[in-house]
Image (cartoon, rainbow over the protein chains, first blue to last red):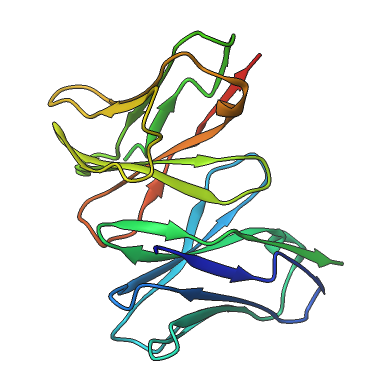
Length: 110
Length: 113
């Protein structure tokens, strides 16, 4: 079936530490993998995305890696700051739509 | 460039009433998606539409739910005879082409009393 598994569901780190969130997907035809950040009561916002022809992409403190063989991808946030606290969602393209993971609530403690 | 516009932001309905949620995509976007988010849960795909066409409705409940995206005007998600379990945040998103990033609206928070 169409499924994206995301782990962990909650993650607590100290300010300045790194945070890693992992996702696996079921459809080997998936070729687009975005990550969204959602603050409480607000809309999901795209923070980074990667396509299947690329293994890694970086944007300042955020990086995403993709392993197509294993069908998993990860979000890495370095030098975390309190404003990084939010729920993060991974997604994978399946057919002509995006299927989202269950979300990871990241808490960065000052 | 205005983003995805959804209205109303909050909607309260009694059981058995109808709910109509509206979404205007970003300028230049012709692909509209509706997602439902229950409290502390992920985004569940409901339906994908292009102008005047439903492309994928595999996530829509078989009864009481319908969606449209007419040639003129916003996309509408319609829920008939609402029940308490329909209480959720409903997000609309749009994209310029398939396989591109989705831009989300601020959502409509439906409460069924």
